[in-house]
Image (cartoon, rainbow over all chains, first blue to last red; front, side, top):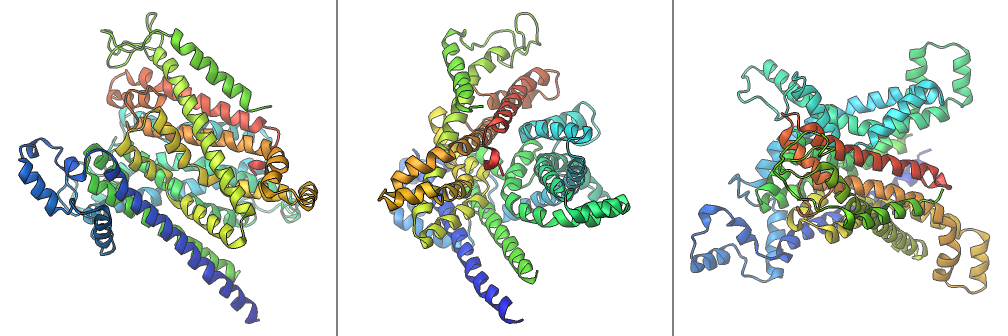
Length: 332
Length: 257
C-alpha cells in the first residue's frame, strides 16, 4: 500500500525539479534580454537617462565622470556581472521618473493587478461554466447555436476594443462608473467607503478581463458537457428526474472541475497579458500601467526591473500550481 | 477547403491595389463625420479613414501571414528535432518550451517593442519568434503519430534517413493539420500585432488597423470615436472571424483537438 505512492513521489520530485530548472533557464534568458537589448541599440543607458531637458547642459567631462561612476565604462562582461549581482541581492535599480527604487514601485502596483485578476477569475469561471454547460447539454439547440455564435464573435474582438467599448458604454455615454484610475482624486478615509470606491473603479477593468477570458472557459465547459451528456451515469440521473440544480452541481460541475483547474494553470500567462492591456486602457495603476508608463517616459531601469519581476512571478506561480496539482493528483 | 489560396489571394489583391490608391494625405477637413466626400469620415489630421483602412490592409495581412509562417516553421523544426533526438534532449526541449509558454508573450513584446519600435521588417520576426513555442507540443504529437506508421517503419528498414522520412512521409501526412495550426497562428499574431500598434509601439509610419484605433483614444468624449474606432475594429474582427471560418473548414480538424 505504501509502496506505490512512494514510487510515484520518487518519480515526481525530479520532474518538478527539472521544471523549476527550465523555468530558471527561461528567467535567465529574460534577464539577459533585458540587459542586452538596451545596450545593442544606439545610445547607452546614460543617454536614455539624460534625455530630459534639464539634464542636457552637462559638459563632456561631467558626462564622462558620470559614465565612470555608473560603471558604464567597464566591459560588457563586468557590467553583466555587476548587474546580475545586484539582481540576486534584490536590488532592481532606481526608477528615473519616480526617483524611487523599482522594487518599491512594483510592490505598490502589484496588488492592483492581483485585485483585477482575482476579481475577474470567479466571474469568468462561473459564467463560463454555467453558460458552457447549458449550451453543451442541449448541443445543436437554439440556445447553443445562439450562444456559441455570440461567443465566437466575442472571441474575435481584440481585448483592447472590448475594454474601450465597455468604457464607452458604462463610463462615457452612460456615465455610471468611473472611466479610469483605481481611486477617486480624494479617496475617503473610512475603510468601508474606500472599499466601495475601489470596487466601483475596478468594476469595468474586471468586466473587460472577465469578458476576454470567458470565451476560453465557455468552449471548454461546452466541450466537456457534450461529452458528459452522453455518458450513461448522466443519462441515468436525467431519467431519474433529479433536480436541475443537483444535476448542474454534482453531475456536470464536479466532472468539469479537473479540466478547469488544468486549463487555469495554462491560462495564467494569457491572463497576465490581457491584464496588462486592460490596465493600460483604463489607466489602472497596476503593473501593466507601470510598465506602459515606463515605456512612454523612457524609464528603462523601471521597465527592466518590472519586466523581470513579472516574468519571475508568473513563472513561480505557474510552477507552484503545477506542484500543487502534482501533489493533489498523487493523493487521487 | 484549402487555406492558402484565399489568404494569399487576398494579400495579392490588396498589395496590387495599393499603388492604385491615392496617397493617404492629411487635409484641412479634420475629424469630418462620414459623408459623401469621406465615406467613413476623417481623423484628427484630416486623413480619410476608408483610404487608411485600405492602405493598412496589406500590412496587416503581410505581418500576419509571414509571422505565422515563421512561428509554424520554427515550431515544426523544434518538433522535428525533438522527435528524432535522444530522450534526454527531447525532454529538455519540451521542458524549455513549457517554461517559455508560461512567460506572457505580451510582456516580452512590450519590452522589445519599447526599444525597437518595429516596422514591417521588425514586426514579422518579433511576432513570429514570440509565438512558435505554443505549437511545439502539438506538432510533436502529430509527427510522432505519423512516424509510428508502417510506411515510415518500412522506409527506415530500407535504410532511409530520418530527414528523408520526415520530408517524404511525415510532412505530407500532417500538412492539413499544419494548415489549421497555421491559421490559428495568423489569428494569434494578428491580435498581438494589433495590440502593439494600438499601444503605439510600432513604427508610426506604418499604417495599420491597430494604430488607427489608437487615435480613437483621444476622442472618446466626442462623437468622433465612432468613426475612428469602429471601422478598424470591425475590419480586424471580420478578418479574425474569416480566419476562424477557414480553420473550421480545413479538412483535418484533429489539429484543434
